[in-house]
Length: 166
Image 1 (cartoon, rainbow, N blue to C red):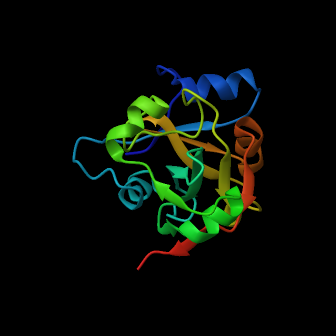
Image 2 (cartoon, rainbow, N blue to C red; image 1 turned 90 degrees about the horizontal axis):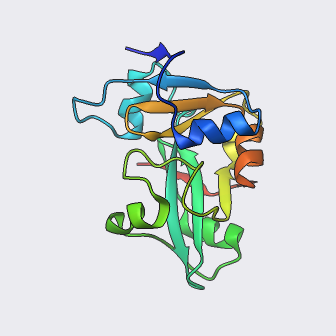
């Protein structure tokens, strides 16, 4: 069941958007069935998977961390990501390091409100869409907003960084 909530406890990500005067909708879903992967979340909130985005945290060969926001039904192209970031090589961080680095857990990692604002890249496929959906920073809660507004709030750049999942 999808609800656009009016009175709920806001996450740090939502508060950041409020502070920036960025319009968004909160979409909630029931996470209790354990199906919390991006494609399942898209189905639960009644949205196309190409609109729902996952937030991936990486580290470059320079030891700099980067955030990549891509559709849930696609995969990060590590070579394209490295090129976009100006790195020789990019790799995913270990899941065990996610919370200490960002403040978020797997499945609830928002590009907004991390402990530090890392260089951020959004899939070029989102740039000309009216809306996109990202985690609100809590499993069971998503934010629907304009991609250009998300880019503004995260200082993100749009880049061709994905490959289609098999």
